[in-house]
Amino acid sequence: MLEIWGKNKNFDKIVYGDTSMKKITKNDFQGLINVIRVPLELTPDPRVVKEDAADLEKYERDMKERAERLAEAKKIKEAQDKAKREDKELKR
Image (cartoon, rainbow, N blue to C red):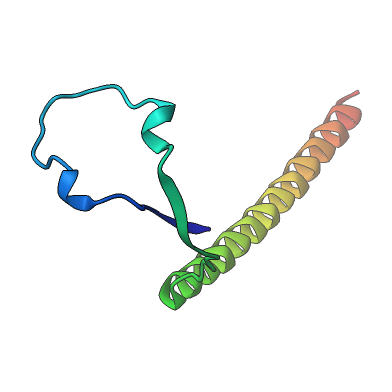
């Protein structure tokens, strides 16, 4: 939401270039009125949307490949363990 506030006072009384850093109090906002209130719709840049979609596809593809590699490594390890067990049984 974008809100623009203004004053109903004479703007000639505003001291510009005043470098004194005074603390802002509630009384400083007493004369303000809401001039306009505009709802904002945030729309992403189409290039960013395309990049995000490409990144998501790459991430999903990488995770799928990783899962396949882990499953294959697990099968290989199970086969090796089975072969070791069979060798131990044959030696007995």
